[in-house]
Image 1 (cartoon, rainbow, N blue to C red):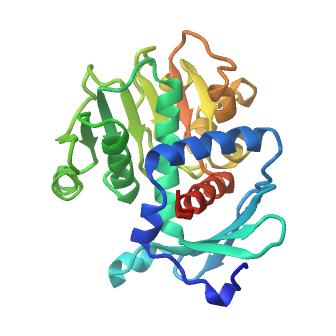
Image 2: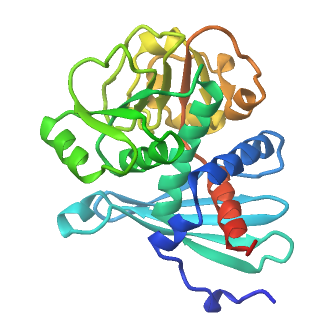
Length: 308
């Protein structure tokens, strides 16, 4: 018998993370990408409402034949001065046929893990070979999720962490280390041996604009507003560009917008999975996120809760 909403308790961040191991989460997102492209998942653009102190409330629903989800998260930039997390919220999952509530997951944990899993799926799909060395731009929470995902799926890999301030890189290196990964602070240009570059910043100017290489995959995760940019036009225009959500990217992918990207040339994550538009040219993957990936995470979590 389905539980009432009142009978459900919100899972903690740790409990939510336990239900979202990266390998099955990547598989769930791959399935959802094909469902989304085929119209089997309905995921409208997120609704953004203002909160005091430059905060925003984000409403992100999605539905499919099996389940529906609603992610409701609040992003409050001023929380850092109060000793509070910047993001609070939940992802509620419901039975698709009856609408009965099934689970309430921690919203920031779902967002962090599914975003990292989208990047890992892009690497699995678009990289010419399993990565040996990654350059990571950014020292925030999402960078920590990506380090955890890389350690889980690519044990022994080396990760060079680049940041605007050396002190931030050193702090991230000391606090974000996980077993089985060679994490190192870095500065200056990306080492030529790096085969994947992942950017996770809120920079207003490009942090990377090298000539693209067929043996180096570029993955852009930050720059989620039109005024932001992580990759420069040299890297963008010289690459085949794949986008997790092409519709949302037109409004949110700042680096592509500023580079005057030809949207008709972009391919989706589903295209990448089915090898549509694959060439020998260098590849760049842009991630902007959508509620379809939160639905995929809810599917993964619900499956994890079912005893074998």
